[in-house]
Length: 99
Image (cartoon, rainbow, N blue to C red):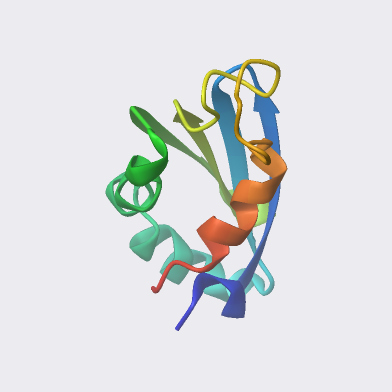
C-alpha cells in the first residue's frame, strides 16, 4: 500500500535542507509505520533529487516520524532554477512510497 493510506505529511524547508514529518492517521498504525519507513527507504526515494543524507527522528507521542533530508532543494529555494523546489512539494513524493 502507499504510505498515504495510513499517514499524512507536513513539510518545511530551509536552505538546501528539507524536513518532512509523516504522521499516522491512527495511533495503532505508528509501529508499522516506524518499522517500514526507514532512513534507507527515504534516501532511496529522494536520492534522484540529489539527497545526500537522511536523518530520522521518532516522535512516538504524536505517532510521527520526522525526516531531515539534505540536498533535495537544488541549493535552496532562492538559488535553484527549478520551477518548484520548495520543501512543501516533497510531501507528495514521500506519501507515494510503497510500504
